[in-house]
Amino acid sequence: MYKTQCSACNKEVEVPFKPDGKRPVFCKDCLKEYRRQQAKLQEDLKETEDKKTETENKKTDQEQKKDSPSLKELINQAMKEKRDD
Image (cartoon, rainbow, N blue to C red):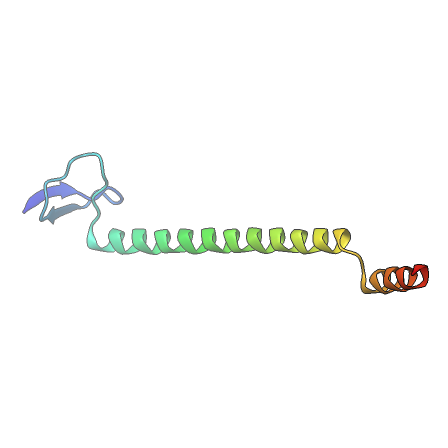
């Protein structure tokens, strides 16, 4: 076991690995809070991505409606073509 300090609260902790100084080391309580915060950030990111996708889909639907003729226009075009024949 290796003695070190928690990166969040500076409490002395023992860990089963040699800290490398590059990554944070947490005590049990701070690790729990860190994981909770990470889960919240991932959830927020997913919600943001879902909203962005939903907005893009709405824009695509609106563009398709603009580009494609309405049913009324299609009927009128078909009737005109039939009269021309």
